[in-house]
Length: 109
Image (cartoon, rainbow, N blue to C red; front, side):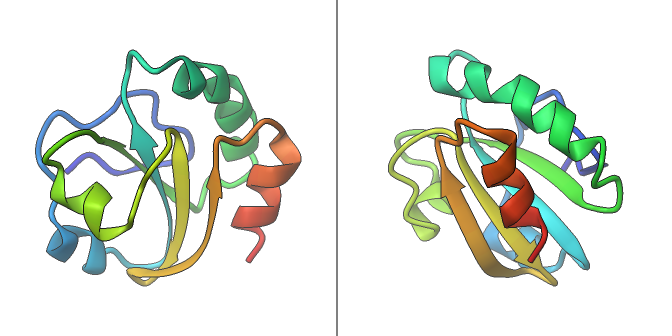
């Protein structure tokens, strides 16, 4: 599983399990989406800008879609869905963010 502190530009090709996520320590931003999703592409500059200020937050980009168990577990319906975790537990989420402020508020938990 590729975990990056700060902005992670690439979605995971490998399957990430719930057990992998629950083992993550500290603050983590899970980003569910796909490389070809227009909404996901639109959110990338916002994420990049915000993550520059949250270098201690791990950023994990998860390819989502039909048959992807992790997205179903988190009840992801729209992309991108950003889920903030602390020690593997969800503490907040934003769906289709359209401003840096939304993402900052999520990560300031």
